Image (cartoon, rainbow, N blue to C red; front, side):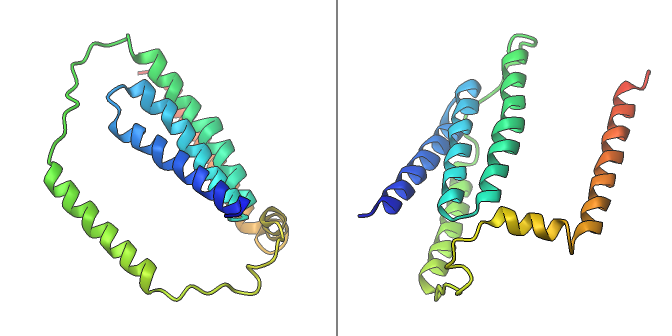
Length: 165
């Protein structure tokens, strides 16, 4: 077993183990912190797939932004309201049947597909440089239009949030 395989199994174990804690934990704070390790495990899998841009994006957006926001939201609002929430399981049998059908379909697709590696995929060229080159050359106009649309949405959201009632 080589180092690449060991790293893959390590990241897969971290991702699946912490994702199961997210799903099955009754404490929402433990679920939030386990989500941190799930995101790190997925970023590690992206690194192993040589998708460096997606791995850095995963770390910056999900771990750096969204997860920190969720954890602050959980920690700051736990004592604000006393709402009695039910955390039991509902409709377990239909959920198990749907998951079993989806898992069977995915496993069948996995085993019957003839996986081929293209000659371009075998290289070690970094994806971030290709994406940066394309964003600044052939896709410059759509990139700028998307940034203006996001800026308008951000300003609109700020105006709606500040509007006096």
